[in-house]
Image 1: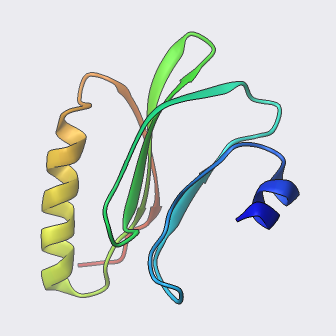
Image 2 (image 1 turned 30 degrees about the vertical axis):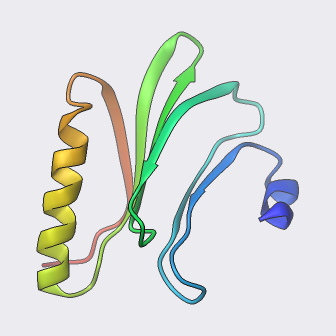
Length: 101
């Protein structure tokens, strides 16, 4: 991680999976003044949510790495939906890898 931080130069936030799979990160341009306020992630590295203030606006950034199998996807997205609902009145930016059901 120190290598990634030094190479990127900007702020990086992580949610780790195992040594060989999963895990997500949110990277910000080094020139952008970002103030992280809260982070939330699942224990398997499937998503990372970051509440961050950029200038005078607060955003929720969410990076997703969804499971591959249908049963796990249903549980994952149900949990993620519940988590996202608490931020429904905020500006949300979502990205990542979403595999087909």
